[in-house]
Image 1 (cartoon, rainbow, N blue to C red):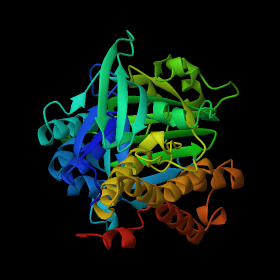
Image 2 (cartoon, rainbow, N blue to C red):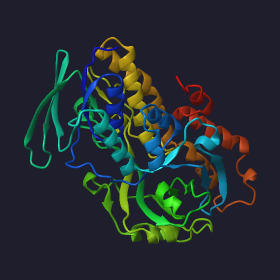
Image 3 (tube, rainbow, N blue to C red):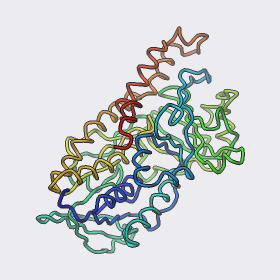
Length: 419
């Protein structure tokens, strides 16, 4: 095992908290520093793929996950008229040893925060601590923190390693890549909402409708609501826009639905009424669809990047949170396997940089959702027979190819059961 006794984790999001749990499991003393004063159950829905659920299960969270998330039964792609392009079972129903979960991001974060506070020391999480600067002195990393609102200094902390899990706007990433600039804007805007509504399809289905420049995603996220016969539906509306990317201050801002809702007025598929779903939602939030170019290096001596700080990607293929969880697992395993701290961080980078780079690049080409774009280009007015537009063989190839890129090929993953 590497000579790592202590770690500073910058960022108390999903990646940072799972990293804390994993490093604690391998014998590292961990402190998590989060910029916000109070960690709240904010956000909307995300998906956890089976390989990420495997990691969380190994960390002892299976029972809590089952209470918090809704097992995704199927994934379905349809065109803008609601005609089915592709359907496949997901999770246990697809033969995986672990479920896929649709879950409210905030509820998942609170689950992880509770686990960290229970398993680590009570004072393992420092809120209201924004990273101001850091330096490496020999075999220690020293980090200075401040109150982001007041600028008040909050002291210096030392550890054997520092892990930056501080999001797409990472302070640490900017230190090593000062000329990188703003995230890369896709030319598309996402509007996200969550509302209680009627169940659709299996009541555990995830659907994606439309094509690259006009898309709608919906899936239920709450097992408690499902038990009442209703459905807490997370949805995302996406449009290509000619404008420039909104300034960072406007990300996640609440907006009026009239800005985008008219584009979906005719999207009533019978089994899902998109205009009604949008209308029933009280609060809608706006995000630019962004990522960053892959980096040549994440680890710098005793400092490394993780999650969105390392590889922010388009929200395509349900991969953002899952890949951060896989990062955490790989980092913990590297610490167990290597004899030196710097070698451990380099081994972690070697294990994760190329796979996540491949996902970032695949998502720029629409990832598994490329089938929707192909059908739109070949049959913009809909179809009578899907086989005249795209073959089953081509659909299967594209679906399986992405699973391999993203690391959740069923046979390969299942072969790791109990490892």
